[in-house]
Length: 595
Image (cartoon, rainbow, N blue to C red; front, top):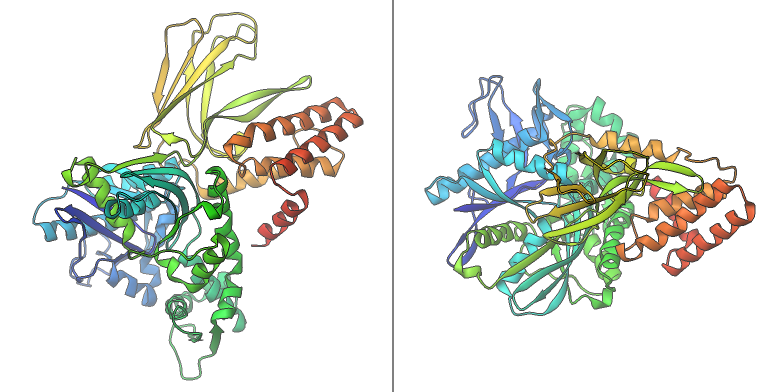
């Protein structure tokens, strides 16, 4: 039996596939949702089901969630957002990584399934946000292994949701847009369903956007009325913040059915006194509070539609996934943006997990799904570090894609490169994942040394092939022209090589770095704008924009004003051809910085 697991930021759940189809497994409390919260208890506390630990017992789920209010220093939540980073979480004097904390949740789900089925569970399919990078996926797999599970497949959450819909409606022919807003992550996936086949067309998202951010926005607004700042309060008054988070989460849910809610502000001890300050928030005021988050939701939706060469009117159904999509402010925004009412046939909290069970059935060759076929895509561009000849200068650190984002997988792509030095007998192929033009702004996955290149002038040909399969493994193959020997590696980068903060710092450093002498601020702005838009345009138009940017850089090296002005005009013309307004984009940069 292969267990289907939805490892969520806020809640997790598991399901099995039976004769009648996928079925959710209830936990020891008789509920299908297990809060993704871990707590370490005092040694003298006896909690049913708690795991033994040298410094106290570990408890998972509803009991841990309750302790988060009264003893926040002993609890951890939202650790899914730390997957793939080196960051550790301190609980009661102990430090845990995100995979370790996630393994406690997975172990609890595993035990619930074994108790329900009366047999040992050793294999699982685990879902992840579609926009998780390779390190985050490897960290998820590690969590499963720590929990005693062989992870047969890591599957994207929107894809799993589509499997649920596809299992129950195999003969429909339509374009679906799955909007998945969970507790901590956001994904949007465009897919086509026809004759029992689910074909993923494009996907986009953000790994740090979810229902928890909506709660945080409401908390910040309430504290501001009370003359406090959320960041300082979290450090100085943790019990107040812990209780207020619970109250704001409840208020957020109440606004789904009420026009106005009243939130009381606890004291420093987390207690609600009779004279506690009350802050009223209407549904309209809440919509204004979370307006910056709605702008962030719009970005990935537009990106997925552009990559799929699809307009909103070309979508037959908009499917909502994730508990945060229950918020009226989200549904109203999507209805206005996509010009149709979103569809909710299945419980948004459960549809991903049910799909994971369908995927498990597909892997087990279950006859009930033998006529169901699914294809997926590579969510991020994969490429290598290269140099470019710009005028008379050779510049390093450029990113050349080999497999573009949203390419259907499995796939194998080969590109031709060449040496840059005379008598160069070896090269190091550095593999990156991301969308930015410079490698420093992308995520390095690994490298491969290629030796034995025949001596000769610069320009000796080298062929590099990337092969990417549905399990997420990347095989890199390289060889020199005329040589039979091929060099290969399967990337096995350990989860957590780069932290999110290190990546953010690298991006910030690059924003202010000048690659070439530029006295004209207009040139600098055009280059930065062009480089940023490289990650936004469709892969079909990437080369056109790339050539225009290269032309501007080469013209600046020449020092010829007329050439520079001509290159500026050409780049602006490319912006216009691609439907990108220079004025709108520059003002959008300011808005993005403020949020």
